[in-house]
Structures are given as C-alpha cells and as structure tokens.
Amino acid sequence: MSNLLRVATMGGDGTGPEVVAEAVKVLKEVAKLENINLELVDFDICGERYLKNGGVIITDDEVAELGKFSSILLGAVGHPDVKPGILEKGLLLRLRFEFDQYINLRPVKLFPGVETPLKGKGPEDLDFVVVRENTEDMYTGVGGFLKKGTADEVATQTAIYTRKGCERCIRWAFELTRKRNNPKGKKLTLVAKTNVLTYGHDLWMRTFEEVGAEYPDIQKDYNNVDACCMWMVKNPEYYDVIVTTNMFGDIITDLAGILQGGMGVAAGGNINPEPGGTSMYEPMGGSAPKYTGLNVINPIAAINSVSMMLSQEGYQAAADRVMKSIQLVTGTKMKSQAAGKMGYSTTEVGDLVCENL
Ligand code: IPM
Ligand code: MN
Image (cartoon, rainbow, N blue to C red):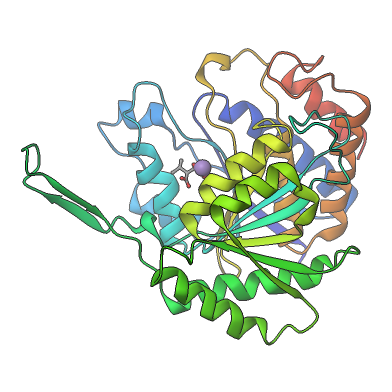
C-alpha cells in the first residue's frame, strides 16, 4: 500500500469549518504516529460563497479537481440565507451522484459515557451498522409537475431501483458483515417494504436472496421498515448490519443517530469502493448556524468520520487508534455530547483526542 494519503477538506457552512479543523488536527496527529504521508488540500465551497458568487455552488473544474482525491472530508452544508434544497442538491447530492458514491455507511455505536434516550441500554446493546444505498430511489430527481399551481395539479416523484444498483450495495453489505465478524453471530438484515412496494422492493428482495446464497456463513434476515423503527428502539442489540434503500436509509439513520447520542457523535461515509473512486466523509449533523464561531460545537462526529475514512483507506491501525481515543474522551472526560455542555470547548475536545491517541 502506498503511504501517501491525499485528502480534500471542505469545511462548508456554519460550524462545519470548526469541526473539520478538529478532525484535521486529529488526522495530522495520527498520521505522524502511524507514519502516514498526509497531504491536505482545502476547498472553499460553501453557501457563503454561493451567495457572493451569484449562484455558483461548485464549478465543473472543482468537481474534476475533487475527483482526483480518494477521500474528501466535508463539514456541513446549509446556510440560513439559502433556500433549503439548493446546496443539498447542488453540492452534497451532486457529489454523491457524480462520484457514484453508492454506499452510504452509517455506523451506529454508543460510545462509553454517551447518553442514549433508550432506558436500560448501554454500549454493548447499541453497536450496528447501516448500509444505505446512495444513488437511486427517490433521490434521482425523476418526476415532475403537471398543471402546476392549479387545482388539477399533479406531482410525481419516482423511485428508481436497478438490479446493478441494489446488487452492488447488497454485495458490499454482505462483505462488510463478513469482515465485521460479530462474535454474537454474523447477520445481515434487509430493511425495505416488500408488502407494499411490490415491484421495486421485490427486486431488492430477490437480489438479496440471490446474492445471499453466496454467503452461507451469514444469517439472512428481513424487516419491514416500519417494524425496524420499532425494533431499533425496543431491541437495538438485535442488529448487526442493516442494508436498505436510499430513502428508508435516510430516515432510519436519523433515528439510529439519536439512539447513539445524537448529531454530535454520528458520522457517515459516502463511499465509492471501486479502485480510483472518490469517497466523502461527514459528520451527520448540519451547519448549526446559531453556534457558529462560538467554539462550543461537538467535533466528535467529524473526528469519528476521520476514523471511518482511515479504515476505508486501508489504515486500520490508525482508524482504531482514533476510535479508541474518541471512546476514552467520551467515557472519561466529556460531560455531555450537546453543544455548549461538553465541559470543554470544540478545540479542547480535539486536543483531548490528539493527546490520547
Ligand atoms: C443525509 C441528509 C441528506 C439526505 C440531505 C441533506 C440531502 O439528510 O445525508 O442524510 O437526505 O441524504
Ligand atoms: Mn438524512
């Protein structure tokens, strides 16, 4: 493996740059300890620039430039003066689609010392991974209006599922389940809605069964998405790896995110696992404009996304080091994961993780 790790950083809006700064601090420190030759290039792409530049979110040249990196660290997109949907579609979704980041990886792990809203559940009960398909479903933008603005208006928003799209995601999830090698038993749960979505999710189910036949060591399991929401709250320890569609994955990972202590902790990776692919890692929280510049936002989620990035890049020892340090800091130092209540500032939390690597 080449020892050069080139990472593009994109702080984005609001508190995004503050959390990315801490993530970068930790990344630099662990690179030193693990002898990784790190090269960082920052991209100034955010809502602020969009407002100043008369509507340019990201140029084609910038997309091409970003495509030369295997990893991008993103802070947050979302600006109070930009209509919802513009930056999300113009930046986040554009990059997911252009770089064909077909896996959205969202680990759900309750760190020591972190409060969960689930009564009687601890870190041993909440440790699973959601693999969300990231390029299809209702996210493709297929649809339109007819007779818009009239009493006869029709709106369609089409969910697209392809054999290729669900197969590559399901296969990746099976491989991940095998690698995770859960001592409680390897289990992959397909979450869908086959009782109602009898075409699209039938394709998912048939593909799951066909691909699953290649993985006799893994228990195959199915939940309807509504039941999954119930089980996730009642018996989260039931899950090992979940594989699901884009839209359902979006929804259940917000539920899962709050179970693991909220947006200050949860991280996600938009992954193109193919050779030469460009992946993008981000804290799941938004730009939190009201906390901007106050040095109070929780950088743990962004640092967590660094661990995920290192693992995907093949630097497992470095990834484990970051993950262990995070758990030490949440378990023995931080008072809370909520902005302003951590007992430390944003930069101090970053320092603590660095000191304990
Ligand atoms: C997420 C977000 C995005 C999504 C939005 C911002 C487009 O909610 O990453 O989960 O729906 O995928
Ligand atoms: Mn979401």
